[in-house]
Image 1 (cartoon, rainbow, N blue to C red):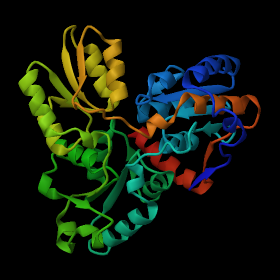
Image 2: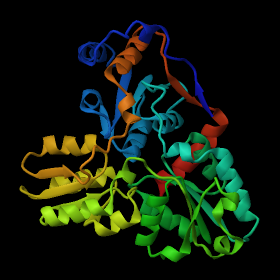
Image 3: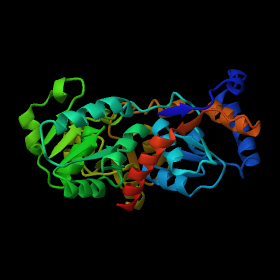
Image 4: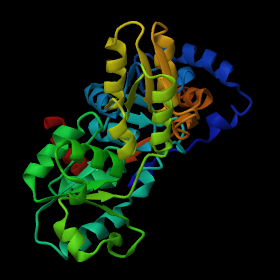
Amino acid sequence: MLDILNTRTNPTASLAHLTDAQAVIEIHKLKQELQDKVVLLGHHYQQDDIIQFADFKGDSLQLAKDAAKLSNPYIIFCGVHFMAETADILTSNEQQVILPDLDAGCSMADMASINEVENAWYNIAAVTNDTVVPVTYVNCTASLKAFVGKNGGTICTSSNAKKVISWALNKGDKLLFFPDQHLGRNTCYELGVKLDEMVTYNPNLQNGGLTTEEIQKAKVILWYGYCSVHKGFHLEHIHQIRKSKPETQVIVHPECSFDVVQASDDNGSTAYIIDQVRKAPIGSSFAIGTEINLVNRLKQEMPDKEIISLSPYQCLCTTMYRVRPKWLYASLLSIKEDKPINIISVDPQIAKFAAIALERMLTI
């Protein structure tokens, strides 16, 4: 349950005329003024005019760890809904987490609702006596994090997926992994699970589109969801790179499809991609299959290397893009006026079980 305590009202109504450039100037002033009260977390996919203000930058796992250590009364999360929810779960009741734009969601997270997952859980239990361990990718609602917490499962990020999924496969007979089929398939395959031991559950079809026999035989049941950004990278993009730039190393995010990951030279989380590119020798060439803002930032940071996007098209996370300077300024202004807006507050019962799942993840 996502409970928005305040909505974007008075502060932003008077900011409609404000340009991004003007907002950036005002943010610099307010951030300095509120430095003891406010900490800004920024996901790597944010644009430069936002990420420049982040006190902590990272992927989902790193920002979750950072949030857990903070004591500041206000945390502004420059990311999307599920990230702000996670920060609220990991911080104290005295702290408030603010999302600059309440419309900054995640299309992948929207592909798995609590009702759909619970129905799938019951459908699977009805046809097998095997122990099923549920694991959710962090890109999901707090209610799904609570679901795995209640049912002996946990959460993973792209950084720790191998460790978490290994734990789950050792703990039970079957793995139910949601909402991203590609991260699940790529990781399980890398851990030795065969493709014919994995099935895909589509909640829009009766019984997930699976027969009783298919569920009984499966070792891994993957949800049908996917990332709209990483779905934009295709096998032909790699073939084109191989022809035009044979010396270029192709490195992609594991949210990409199975054929793309298999054809690439390397794959890993956002943090892994950044690390691999940074430690590569001068003159190295990379074609990167992940969100364009990160690719462009790495290109600016390391002009001594050739860095391009794997796709010739702009693979932009449009929901991350919704966090614009004027909304960040409005959030800071509301704190200054002691009337904070866009507070993300997870229902205490949901937070309780979601925290159990998060603690399992951090322990693993």
